[in-house]
Figure 1: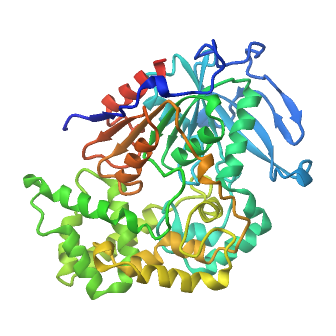
Figure 2: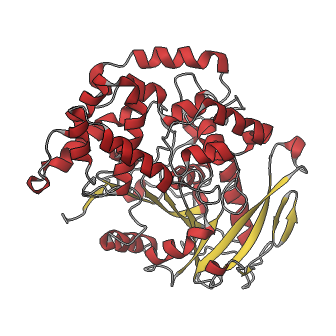
Figure 3: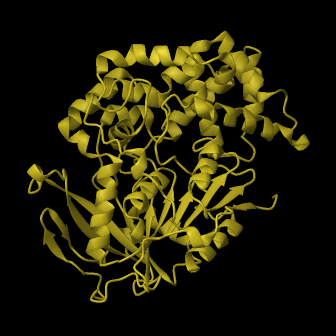
Amino acid sequence: MRPIRMLVATAAASTLALGLTAGTTAYADRQPDRQQDGKHDTGRTGSTAWTGFSLCTKPALTAYRCGTLTVPLERSSRHREGRTLDLSVLEGGNPNASRTMLFLTGGPGQPGPDLAPRILQALSGVTDQYRVIFLDQRGTGDRPLVCPELQAQRGFSDLRVPTRQAIRDCAELLGPDRAHYSTTDSVADFEALRRALGVQRWAVNGVSYGTYTGQRYAAVHPDRVSHLVLDSVVPIAGFNGTLVSSYPDYTRVLRDVCADPARACPGDMANDLRTILRREPARGPMMFDFVTTVAYADAETFLDLPQWLHDGAAGNMAPIDQTYAEWHEAFAATPSQYSQGIQASTFCADSDFPWGGADSWEQTRDWKADRAVSRYSSRELFPFNAEAARGNGLMTLCEHWPRVRDEEVPDDELSLAGVNALIINGERDLGTPLHWAKAAHRAMPGSELIVVPNAGHSIQIGRHYPEVNQAVADFLLDR
């Protein structure tokens, strides 16, 4: 493996401001009166309540302690005493450590506590000196949003195209409550959890969508974040649902895979992909999902994609079609594993689209999307096509998702200047492409960026990159 490249911003550390009161110790993370049993602030405040920790009851989690945080479904003043949500919380690492870390999983749709054993292995370099907190973000894990048909159609996928009927059925099943599952709601939940745990400041470590929620939390509460780790970065301001800005990353990565002489690719993957889509334009959304899934599965070799694309360019689509059908079954997921209900509710509330935000009129979305995509040149769309941009799974999902209030946060409230951050991204990550991580690095003077050669999505988990895990540990244990 090529050595890891670490890029460090040149801004002087002395120019950074963490918002600390003069003389505050960097690791005085817990309130002085915090009880050792983890039950600080136990009880109900308004519509928020905390049970404290006790041994987890799930068989796979009995080595850890669990609790339940109760939060308001809606935090507006007129609903302050209204309905609530229970969020499962798990405590790993050293329960008596003076430092605390909040670990944020991805999706949106992944659980927190159920993934803790695997994640804690990857964090073994710091678990003696940190207690590590996981929670089921609203609508996930033990109490997921359930949309049976949408779940069956999409499973673990973010980009598989659902039917309009499955989307509308999901929205109808969830009803008006679907408006209360945005990232803004989750950020408020994180702060409620910090208060319940009696933590003054904590490290926040996010993977994939967890980087988005982590950045949003750090922007609102910079004085509460001692360290911010971003692994596989989603832009803090969101992204355009067409995802055309990521297409150059696909071209770069597809050609980089075949640049290795040992790979012996039968053709140029990017050109072969465009050849397929010139012949069969309607395959654009499916091929976008297919290539992205290959990158998730094996970013180093890309499986047999060079041969599959070359065969497809020659007119034989059977290998691709068969593999794609098999993956649909292999990547099935229950709502507790990956809730498609929360995917729809959160993505459609948070993302930007050619038609505007979540509160845009449904009747105008189609022609606004058509108009926006028609303006892209063939070069901008390479190696995909207009159909991929117009009809990818995210665009389709949110075009037909009923309008809700828009939780848009002004750009001037999204600054992360002064936040102590480490950014990690795989060079071949197509789920969260490298240019997103580089943009985040530029926006955070003093941050560090680690680019891992030949790597894909979610670098920390799985212990495939011990040098990265060590770099994360060094960062979290420093300062």
